[in-house]
Amino acid sequence: MTAYLLKGVSVVGGSPTDLIIRDGVISSDRSGALEEIDAAGLVALPGLVDLHTHLREPGREDAETVETGSRAAALGGYTAVCAMANTSPVADTAGVVEQVWRLGREAGLVDVQPIGAVTVGLAGKQLAELGAMATSAANVRIFSDDGFCVADPRLMRRALEYVKAFDGIIAQHAEEPRLTEGAQMHEGEVSTRLGLTGWPAVAEEAIIARDVLLAEHVGSRLHVCHVSTAGSVEVLRQAKARGVLVTAEVTPHHLLLTDELAASYDPVFKVNPPLRTAGDVAALREALVEGVIDVVATDHAPHAVEDKECEWAYARPGMLGLETALSIVLSVLGDRWDLIADRMSRTPARIARLAGHGTDLAVGSPANLTLVDPSARRVVDPAELASRSRNTPYSGTTLPGRIVATFLRGEPTVLDGKAVK
Ligand code: DOR
Ligand code: ZN
Image (cartoon, rainbow, N blue to C red; front, top):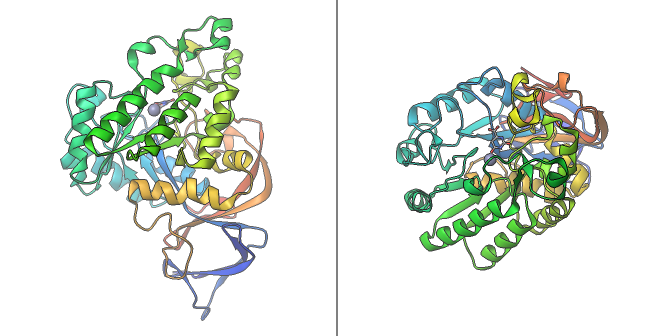
């Protein structure tokens, strides 16, 4: 196993130092041959952890596979991703989550932690075999029907009760389905102007309010996926002040883009929950800095060309995220490295209970890390992405920062900005 010396690296924004990677861990042993990497001006972060990735395998390997999504993740600076359950077949049995977990191990580019479905077939009628998924080789701890909301309050209560026994967590896609029937974009001035059916903020806020009360009642852990409105932030703020065991994520796109983009009728901007207003964006940024929103999660949602390059109404919601997330967060937060390490690595690793991830880069720690060049700029070219899909909303835009290298347990998965395998 090659040993590496990262010369003059800034660890999470600190003053330049040398970091040695040997036998899978951060080491202080300078003996023997060391492969030197000139890391002057580069920042080392604990490997990024994504709580919300759609890898599409099994079922839509034309849009993404565990391998292509893993490569996109490594190139984005990630060392672990949680794979959403809305595959085909749905990841609602021990068999399917074990399959995804095994494919992740075979690809060997990031740790792929499967998320299990809450209900059979994501149909919202009957609890899936949560216990069997938890005790499977995939060791599932997060359950989600993402793509759909667990709308039935009785089922949601049962799910929260069930996972409490093994310290599991229910990750909710908060969308009251009766309030979003036929919705095409955020309900507001722009939807009125365009004549498109709106997705009101209250459809998200009502479910979060209900679910924090259920989580409080049961004493179980709730995670809220892709929070998108200022009102949701207020509900979360109050719940956290009361000590409810709730965590929340925001996506890079909800931190940057607004509903005005729907006026282009370019379906690349169609996403669920939809892009909101500038006021919502400002509230989300503030909540992320404060910690009312705990983490940035990508909601990386690859879609095949025919599902995206069509009329707005027929296009699937979702956009790519893994290969641009850190750049977007850098452009939003600036070089607040400790905050970035917290919201993109330490806290998501803790929420998902991923041992060996999100740990400080101290001697003896697992060498899961990424090297960032904050001064680099790049123009996003969809054809150059490792994802099998092309639906990035940042095509042609110039973004700050570049991932130079990523290490998973001491082995490079990315070197010189290129995937190693
Ligand atoms: O935009 C979205 N795309 N939101 C979701 O909840 C699901 C996701 C997908 O699977 O494409
Ligand atoms: Zn979702």
